[in-house]
Amino acid sequence: MKLTERDKKVIWHPYTQMKNAEIIGIVKGEGAYLFDESGNKYIDAISSWWVNTLGHSNKYIAEKVSEQMKILEHVIFAGFTHPKAVELAERLLKHLPSDQEKIFYSDNGSTAVEVAIKMAIQYWSNQNIEKKKIIAFRNAYHGDTFGAMSVSGRGVFTDPFKPYLFEVEFIDPPVKGNEETSFNQLKSIVNSGNAAAFIYEPLVQGAAGMIMYETEILEKLVSYCNSNNVITIADEVMTGFYRTGKFFATDYMTEKSDIFCLSKGLTGGNMAFGVTSCNHKIFNAFLSDDKTKTLYHGHSYTANPVACTTALASLDLYEQKECFENVKRIEKKHSEFRDKIKNNPLIKDVRQRGTIIAIELKVEEGTSYLNSLRDKIYSFFIAKKIIMRPLGNIFYVLPPYCISDNDLDYIYKSIEEFLQQLG
Ligand SMILES: Cc1ncc(COP(=O)(O)O)c(C=O)c1O
Image (tube, rainbow, N blue to C red; front, side, top):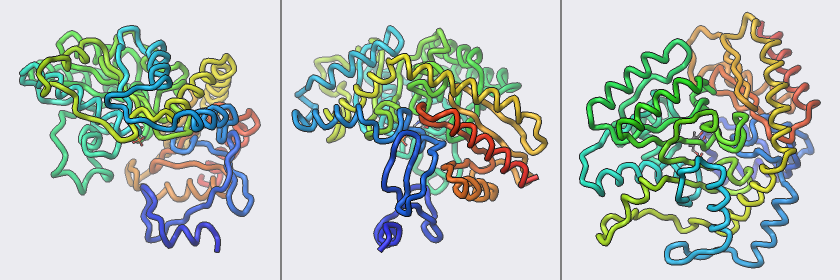
């Protein structure tokens, strides 16, 4: 029996309407390619849900993981530590802003966000200060656990759970032309005196549709929070590890945030892992002889040594000149392609930041994740052996950094063909 037939009997896939799901069975990965059970080779143009920065089945990472598995596979992280967790924290802190002080490990992007929210809420409650409101962008996406859903925009992903989500103060994202509105909304919530924290996806809002905004306005929003004692949380889960052209998207800014969330590229897409880092101010509010001030959060696999090793091996590769050169190469090619197609009458907007290029098609029925163009786009590119995952009428190329110029050119050419047959 084919893998996909066996799958159909026993598997429930994420973000998938199982009634008519068409699943492809992948049996091998290599660099920017994935191979299915019939021997078809696909270009992974979306880095497998934005995680695979360094290419599939990376031999260097595999070696390091294999060595670690024979030394120490896991140890409880409450009351114990191990070399890989400490080394990784030391090295991550070198990449994060200089005032970041402590690393808290968890399992994925959503848990990294949960931990950040809990740190922010308990920061105030530990000091008996009444500050409750969390500020977020209206169409944000921070994950699928309940806290992460609460700080995410309300919509098709969250609708069934609406009554169970805590209240959040949403402001408009500060896209071009909307900067002042966004700032004024934030200012008025902050001035109410009850704002506990502001969480944001820096410069690019991924799941919202690769919505992009400028550094200057983000700097202004974060700065206003910082100077008014509102905790700032940078969710770098998607943007981290060179995705936007710098190591972190917040590296474009000078204003610092209190808390950072990392995942996805943290392990180069090789293992589920999450990090929440914080500065001295946050950490200090949890130090006490009173045990109720403790951050009572942890997962069985917190700081798993194999996951830490995977992240360390990924850092080895990120820190090589070749990685940065690849990022700049993709960035340049993307921006040339953007200029080439930006006047196409079918395109509402084409935007680019670092290794991400997103194309938003004009539609009559309104921009939405459920837009019917989605399936058309997906099927067209699958037939071309390119893996895309459109967000409604918006599709994007967000490749592993090892992708070749030839493969990028093939993707661009296929996009032009798609536009041609659409028009
Ligand atoms: C900005 C951001 N935060 C958090 C998450 C959640 O990460 P995960 O899917 O690993 O739970 C995502 C996932 O796409 C994301 O883009």
